[in-house]
Image 1 (cartoon, helix red, strand yellow):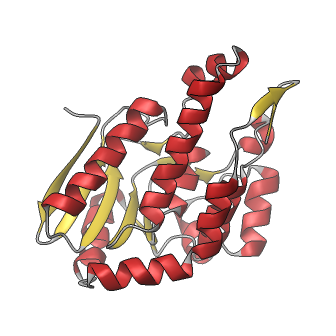
Image 2: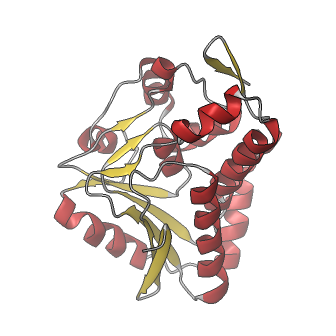
Length: 237
């Protein structure tokens, strides 16, 4: 089984993240970007749905077991490549020329929650899984592009609460605050996400231009940031 793979279902491309907890490292990011290119170039899909094969985790965010040694060893070349590739994935999803839907099939923590914010719409499993930004407790302030992505997906009052407290919230609370379109039981999650995506038969060229105009500020925030460094156990931009 590939780390990232996809299948087509009546014009909807379904992308599966198959790398365990789907932690973000260079190998994962590059595989994701490659499959996104393949879907755009080799299919006539009009919508994209992304989910995870793990039984209880959508994505647990940045692979700190992989990244922290790189930062601590001051391997600036690899660190910069990672963060630039992460930004490429965020921007690619943000501007993808078809409607994108995250089917959050379990826990979406840290970078995994941020990743879901890059999608146009989100559906979330209600019977298992939390949505959470624990960076405040991990000592990892968000990068500017991450903040911009979260702001475009989460109402300001809720974004501040989640950002500054690290609170875990359920799918039902995400739905109540319009972070997700719908909270669904596991057995209904993909059915609901695919039914929604299947209705979004828009022209790619039109969507691409609308997204480019709508997300100008987010793209700018992503493009101007530099990789963080570590000082006294805290990431600083």
